[in-house]
Image 1 (cartoon, rainbow, N blue to C red):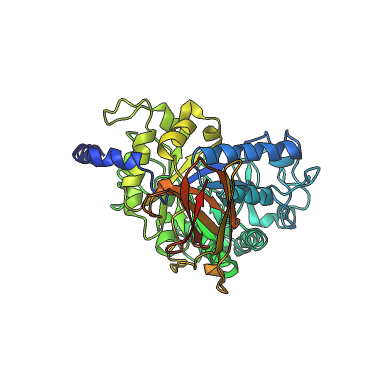
Image 2: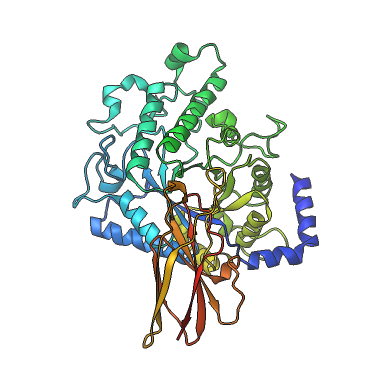
Length: 502
């Protein structure tokens, strides 16, 4: 690890001017996500429907102000629902009691989709696949599938889990995903690092019965990995069969394998996805079953056992043709001083610069999003003013589709000469191909005499999911350009333009 850090420092010194210039100039395309977990967040159950809606809008406003363009919202924390479901019960984390509907009833997932899109942000629906309870004192509510098929579940360290070995459980989870993708306009389905549970006190996961029944002579570790692989493959197919433009993303634990376990592993010394959680995330990318991975690199850059510097490079080198976004702990990032002599009291600038220099990394995701909205140690201010100060487009998913959409039609601008309010409106391009239909629009503004360059991120005024946009301008002449984003985030080639004088 010391050699890796040394080489990186030398490279940084040689290209210092370029590096610091690149972080000052914000990229046009970059994933800037934030996780909003609902498990262990009891404020939702303690608030009314209206208070929750106001609270979520405030969170979204603050994330947008900090430059974020995607929200990963937890809608199935433990085999329950933060949305209207005929399959699973309402979440206790929403209402205080599992199975109890909110009063007045509302649909948090639908609300978050609408509100995120209204702010030009994507909404990724976050599901935990296997977890059912959080403690030994907890029992699934009446009507939960656990009560009709207890043989498909196990108890581990006092908690109830779906046994990943059973096809019936994979079918059930796929049914949940299909239901969400069919009924909701989500941009992605997301899962985190909880597959087989994290080991507790050296205890073995209690799957002897299913292994005897279904093991087919495989080594147990290989068999467990295969169980998870089958789920990931099935969910990928489920999503693409319903809406092929909806992405499937996973945020695995930050270490795939240590080098001492595998020559292709990272120069680290910690718990391993492959061996301890039975999650072979690099295989999922190789097979094309996932569209993005967000490895949870929740350590400081120089951590002795799991250096975020080392692991960022490792995941960059193992992208396997899929997007890599780096999962960043806000607290760890802001609590540790930088390591490159910059005298920064935190590692924010270094980590963002690193993510932009690595060729296969397309952005970052902040954990937890609540620390961004709380502006922990000024993180939101720094993102807003320095590192995410301009609007960024989500990277395109070219393996889903790589054909640019057509341009908008009938772009018009009206300017209120009293208030200086410009109102743009247009029509979506005509397309029978759902993949090329307009998903969103990008609005650019250029001062009089400036070259029209839609590669210039500083010219982006907004991403909007509606064919309209308005803002107040100063006296002068401006050219507006509007382009189209399709469902795979491809952008139309030139855009349509109109000139406004005030």
